[in-house]
Image (cartoon, rainbow, N blue to C red; front, side, top):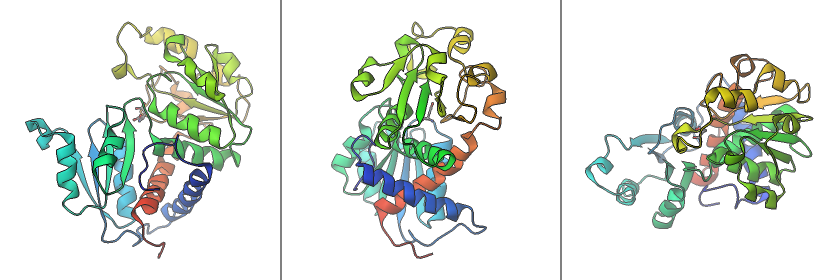
Length: 305
Ligand code: ASP
């Protein structure tokens, strides 16, 4: 592994290895003193050209817990606003002897293009509607912690699949680990092409939730839709919202995931989000562990704690 651009092209052993390593990192996070010297002397750049709370801060903390130095570059305030291309920005930053670049961009494929021109590892922190590989890994890790493994679990992915890079990464990792996946949501937000890779598709929430072990609720990505595509939020909630009633259709021990940020009262009700079946905050914690594992794998060093 030289870069982490997607989960589609990772082998199952690579995925399993990263998840095992992430579980070790969870143990480091549980210690009173979390900082380990593993990446001392290394530096990474967080290049975030789209808004982010969890992912950006979680990469920064992951790097810091491993003792790497981190700089954050955002579009606003950088020379991109003066007309510099992203490629020139990235090349200049990499000349400052940094050891890795973490990039988020609204255009799919930008991390791959940076990997083509840079000779340091590139990590995709979410590109357009393409992939969000560390989110897929942290979702898988959360399910493994709750259920032991993904093998033969029924996972319902609910909502705006079309615009969701999270759904795309989830699909690859969940399939690799043996889960059965059902996509459910409004017909115009469900790409039919997924049927070709063995994913089930329905617009009927009840059908998707019956017997489900895991429910991954997606944010309705209003910023990526044209207004004609959008139903009223009230109608969306009525047909595809996760509420106490719709959750009762799933297995009694089904867990609820959401990658965040959430639209409370639209795709998920507050009492579910904050309730005992919600693994959403565990996902956030696991996100730091997964990003520590990815940085460790790509930037090298030994686990000399
Ligand atoms: N935070 C996730 C992402 O960046 C999910 C979302 O925004 O809905 O893709």
